[in-house]
Image (cartoon, rainbow, N blue to C red; front, side, top):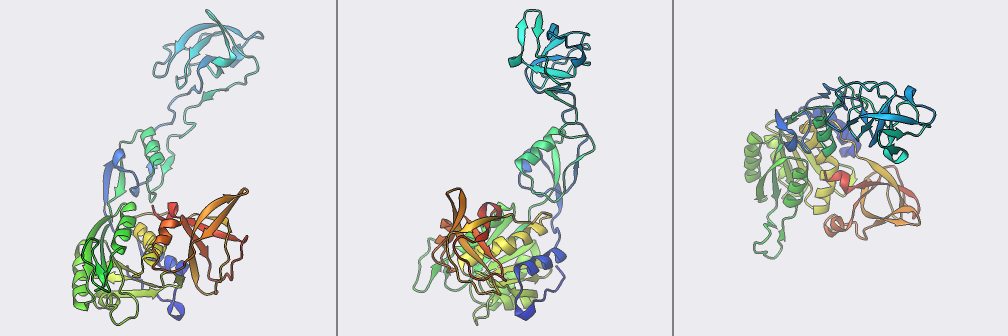
Length: 411
């Protein structure tokens, strides 16, 4: 990451930050080929091109009888001259003026071009009475109808979903080239932070940030090294950053990136590498530091637990995905009705914790009562974030707002 970021008036918008990241970051991990069963949620590193048609042959979409439409008599009665099941093609072309019994997925015999559903037919021993209203091609699936040979079925840069693995299997692939997992070093900072389960002296709190950040990273497929809790000591933090940079693709910290006298992470990054920007015009989560340590990308998240999660989802997540080789970073927003009022001063983007409810056919967002960035129960209670843009004023009940679901932000 070589581009030096700059922000107007000492702050940068989320959109500006993401634009800067897109211009500066790319994959930093190598490639490997994995079996389809091990490809779920990995980042695809190749365009996947079909070498066969799917389906590979014309086949029946129904259980019934196959026939040549031009042979259908006025009374619909044809002799039956064979039986075709899936995996067992008819050994000869369809005889003229005849029908064959056929089952779903079975290949159409040469000459057959229409299938009648068995529910619409009458079986009379060696004959079948077919409906006469059918059109040529009814109930038939043509070769290449799903995928034509030569088609790109999957593009490099996607995170592989179950259906993506299914289409790869459908064209005969046994493995896929993917990016290797991103190696991320994570630590918390602060003399007041304690490991859960340890004694809690006065003035101390248990660490939550490493656990939420690690889980969020692992949900993306990253391999996380937990470096524990570092004290508010510049020398210790510099050493930890330097060592982490030597064996990881990304360093993520929480706490220590504000302007307090004991906030040493920012200073340590500057002395070991470069700090590109560190104040975002968002709430919660203004102090977010991005930079590099000995050439390894670094992101420093705030210390408050809600701010950690929100800034991870909005900034660290796309940053990690870019480093992993992902191309689609877009977040799907959808419009909902505000079920609350909110005073908003233009100039800073705010993300409100909310959950949704159906009310008289409308999708209405309810806001968590507290906006504090230390209230982690708000993240447990909520289902997503209401996005209030920088240029928007106060929100009144019934107005339309945009909602970002955690289902999108935490995967």
